[in-house]
Length: 144
Image (cartoon, rainbow, N blue to C red; front, side, top):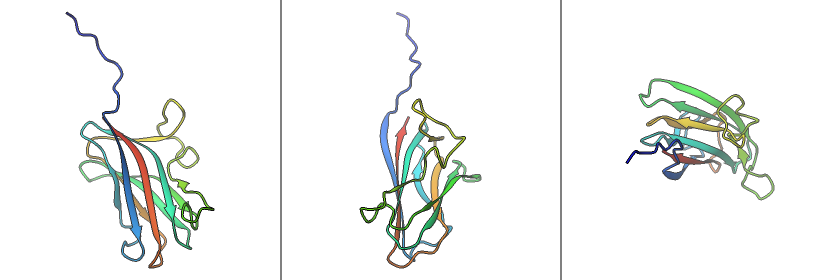
């Protein structure tokens, strides 16, 4: 009996990534991993940022290849004061068409980042935080 080829490869594991930069504990410009590509690669969707501080913070997304030798900046977004933290200012998209033009988009026009196996999506921030401030990033991902 002949085998019929399957041309559609569906995600095997829905997943998510989280990272938090805390007050003066995490130094500015220090990369922290948000998501690591799965064994057969991953797609990262919908990165969202929350800033509970009284200072706007520039957050940068970077992809590091699995060998750790190449860094590629994806984008940089300024998280507004209290974005997602006080019920008035909504969380901010860190990966949206308005801040990630020219990248890959899905069938609905939504941007995503494709990570090869072992690639790391990392983030850093540029403006010093007060001791009590935190910046949180959350992303949705599918592993293949």
